[in-house]
Length: 140
Image (cartoon, rainbow, N blue to C red; front, side):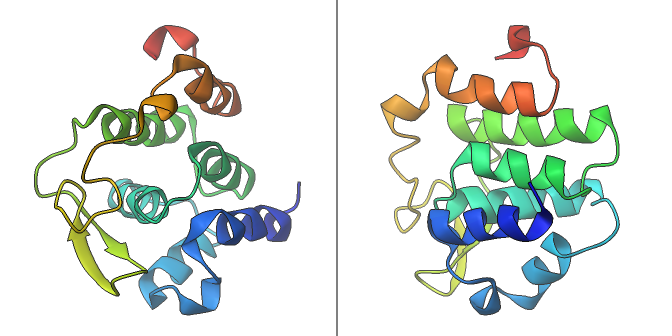
């Protein structure tokens, strides 16, 4: 899949049109260079926090050249896993497109304040991401 098609999936899955995203997010997702650790974390949380499906995020990051090596793939997986399991730091935040401000992942204003829905915790749901990143299912 081409980068433009992958980006359309992100827009359709919850984050809205890229033109409405904060400039710093647009800059990161359109970068021609692999993302650094902090940028991977922020981008992943922005997309997850705004309701983009994890498999769409994985496909975009892996298919657009934003992840430089297997350790970058593993890092994004760990962010997604910790998000899923409610294990992110208490001050972890993302920019909420609905509220137009930063929101802590676990605050009541967050889309995810009640945690990740039970059906999204199923291992089968997350196996697709592991396959996309060529990671072993044992780290689920």
